[in-house]
Length: 454
Image (cartoon, rainbow, N blue to C red; front, side):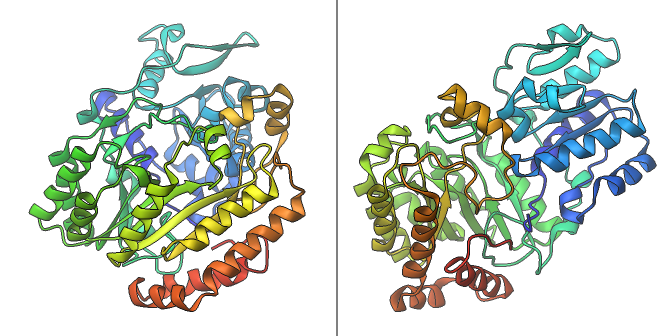
C-alpha cells in the first residue's frame, strides 16, 4: 500500500505500557519505511526487545506472518504478540498458521499491560481476557475483554511515533486522498459503533464511548503548536452519532481558534447530520466530509443492516456540497446476492448527487465480519484468501460475474468524474497542491484499469 498513515494504535499501546508499567518501548513502522522483514529484524536487534508485538491490516497479513517467522528464527524464546485488525477479525485460529505466541483481540491497551505482567509472573495468564495462546500444543482463548470505559487514560505516545517521519508531500500519510498540507495528523473523539453493518470489522466494539471534549481539543492544540500542523484528520467510526457531543467538539475548536483544516474521511452517517452541525463544522475549519452510503438498493440496505435513510442522505450530501465543503461518498459493489440492476442503482445514485468525490469499492468479506462468517463454506474460503489491496475482487458473493463488476466500476468512475459541472466544483473547492494532482491521475487510471496504488 502506498499510503502510510500514522500508526495511532501503536501510539496508544506505547503510552499504556510506559505509564502503567514504566517499560521502554520502540515503534518501528515497516510500512512507512518500506522495510522488508530482514531489515526490520536488524533494526529490532539494536533495541534488543524482551517482547515483540506485530500489528497488521488484513491486506498486510502475509508480510506480518513472514515477519513473525523471522523474529522467531532470530529469537526463539522471545514472546511475540500479534494484534490489530487482522488478528481481531481472524480470531484465535490465526495462531494455527502463525508462529506468534499470543494473539490479542480488540482494544489492546489493558490487555497488553496484563499480558506483560503475566509474562513476568505477576498474574495468572489464564485470567488475561482478550488473548489467545498456545498451552502445551493446545490453542486456548480467554473470554473477550470489556470495552475501555475510562477514556481519560487513553493517550498517544507521540514521541514514540515521531510524526515528522510522516510529513511528506509525495507519500500519502492519511486516509484522505487530498490535503490542505502534508503536516497533518489523525485524532479520535470517540470509539466504537453501535450499528450492525454486516461488512464491518468492529475492532473497537459496538459500545460507543466518548473522549472528553476539552481534553481532546487540548491535545489538538498541543500537537498543532509542537509539530506546526495545518490539518487534522478525524477518524472516528461514527463521529456524528451523538449530535450534542459533535457540536460541542466543533464549538470548542472554534473557541480555541485552532485555525487548521479538518477532514472527516471515515464515513459519517449522512442521516445523523443536521444543518447546525454542518455550519459549526464549516466554521471550525472543515474542508472535507465523506459519507458512507455503501449501496442504494433498499433490499441490500436491509440485508447488510446499514438501514440508511437514502432520501435524507441525498439531502445531507447536497447540503454539505452547497457549503463548498469537499464532499465524498463511499460506495460498495458486490454484496451477497446483489444483482447487476441493484449495483446500477448504487452507481446511478452516486451520479445523481452534488458531491465532489465518489469512491467505488468491491465488497471485501474480511475474516470476522458477519458476511464472512454467515456460511461455513464462505468462512473457509475467506480464511484461505490473500487480500492484496482494496481495488481487486477478493471473493465475488454477488449474483453477477466478475467482469460485470469490473465494467460497472470503471463506468462509475468515468461517468462520475468526466462531468463538466463536477469538474467545475472540484476546481473551485478542492485544495490545490500535489495531492490533488496525484488524486486526479489516480481517478483517470481507475476509469480504465482495475487497481491503482497511490
